[in-house]
Amino acid sequence: MTKSWYTTLLWQAFSVLLIVTLAGCGTTTVKSTQYTPLSQETAIIPESELLDVGVVPFDPGVDGKQDDDVRPEVRNAESRYLASQLVATLQSSAAWGPVRVIPDPTTVVDLTIEGTILHSDGEKLELAIVARDSSGRSWLDKTYREVASVYAYDNRRSQPRDPFQGIYNRIANDLMQMRSQLPAGRAEELRTLSELRFARDFVPDAYSEHVRANRRGELEIIRLPAANDPIMARIQAIRERDYLFIDTLQEHYDTFQRRMDSPYQIWRAESYREVIATRQLKRESTARMVGGIAAVAGGILAAGSSDGSARVGGMMAAGAGGMLIKSALGKRQEAQMHIEALAELGESLEIALEPQVIELEDRTITLTGNAQAQYAQWKDILKQVYEAEYGMPQ
Image (cartoon, rainbow, N blue to C red; front, side):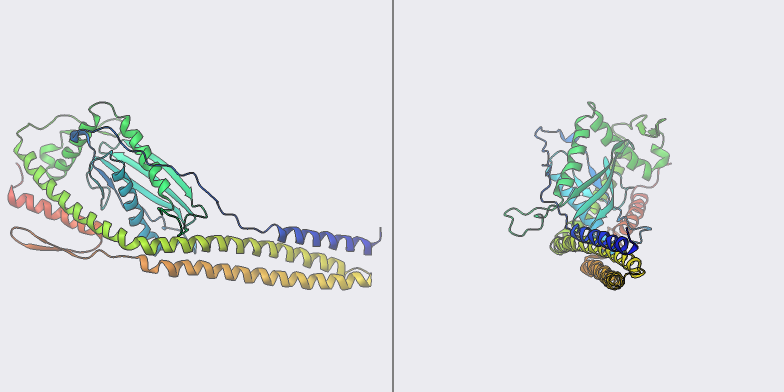
């Protein structure tokens, strides 16, 4: 076997590798996904057993991330929108009492749900969901994933729905399953525990001994206040005011969801197409880079041959390989342009909560900042109202 023949054979092998590599490029999309229907509660639940549910705006999941395709302005808006979608789904299941978006997890409700957005790009949604009742007992600590089908953003569908409605349905179904496993009387006990926790926050001297944490760290009721306890009656009146304020915030979240729905679904559809296109471009870029390097290496090896035709072929192969590498770099630049387009599409999704003016009996107050900040101000005002109207107990 001569050296010339060997180098020519090696170049042919590299050429075959190049062809196979380029031929392997393709776009992968999910044609259909298994849709999970929402379970509906058919039994009549007594009002005393209907648990109040609070969903905290999701953690955007952007802290410490440096990915170019994770846009904080989009994620911050999504954190509210996705929480509102879950609230609407839970309400549709008819298994709960009032279901609201609450400003922060310190808000006292019977069941608190928190979530973190792990991934969201229009093609795939991944959420980490944690749910705890008012005792601190964990109901749910699970990661949910769903991939949208290629038909999810087809405007010709007769009954359009959220591309990821199935993920909310699965969360709601799991919570409903946990609710059905509560022992008799536990739901009423959780409602009472919530009342005692709220009262303890306002008057710790009067109610700190009513609730205690057990060895598992879960709260238990040690004793109940008297049926005609005047302090508890005052606390319940204050709690009604707190509910009214949270309902006002819920109207804000509902309005935000309606305003965001159309542009957000458009962004999702565009993002879906951008993600598919970007993945295809990256695959083509990688394939061309590998093929180009292989062609250059084979060409250099052949160019060193003593055979004249092999040297000519080697130089041509090296040149072709260089062109492939240049093409690969161009594809990567094009992919970066698609990623930047995602940021532009999401810039309009950020929203600020308007200041709220509240009329009290003796004054007018203005709450400013985001929902969490306004709620913190409101809790301070409620304590001032309690002190002014009833005085702190001795």
